[in-house]
Amino acid sequence: MFFGCNGSAQKNSEEKKEFQITKTDAEWKAELTPEQYYVLRQAGTERPFSSPLNNNLEEGTYVCAACGTPLFLSEHKFDSGTGWPSFDREIKGNVAFGTDYKIGYERDEEHCAVCGGHLGHVFDDGPRNTTGKRHCINGAALKFVPSE
Ligand SMILES: [Zn+2]
Image 1 (tube, rainbow, N blue to C red):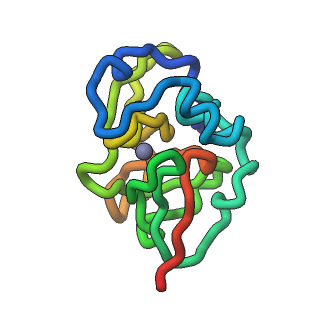
Image 2 (tube, protein in one colour):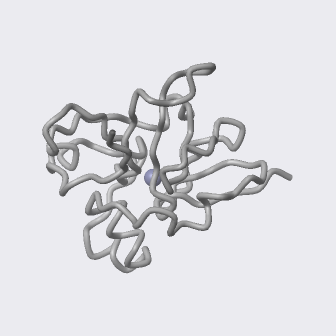
């Protein structure tokens, strides 16, 4: 059984797409922390259980760490036990998908629809009583905005 969130270096096809927010590599590097840059711009994967957001149970919205676009809601977060923040659904329209075949089977890579920042991958082993999907997201790609 494979539980993971690990993505190998990603193909650059979506970088050719036009995103609403586009910046040069140097600009992203200057704005983001090294961990954020590694995940968002290089499609890296943070160490499991390394994100403080993994155990965050507060109510609020998870937004893109790079551009602030709302991506996931706390009510859709669940404890997958994998060590990465997990959600059973995204905020429709704000997350875009690309297929990633790098480790030998088809997976759906997901990224911010506004800036193209890599977020994680979606798998089909999520909660059966809701969507059945597990959006396995790097905490480094997210910022948490508590509800008022
Ligand atoms: Zn973004």
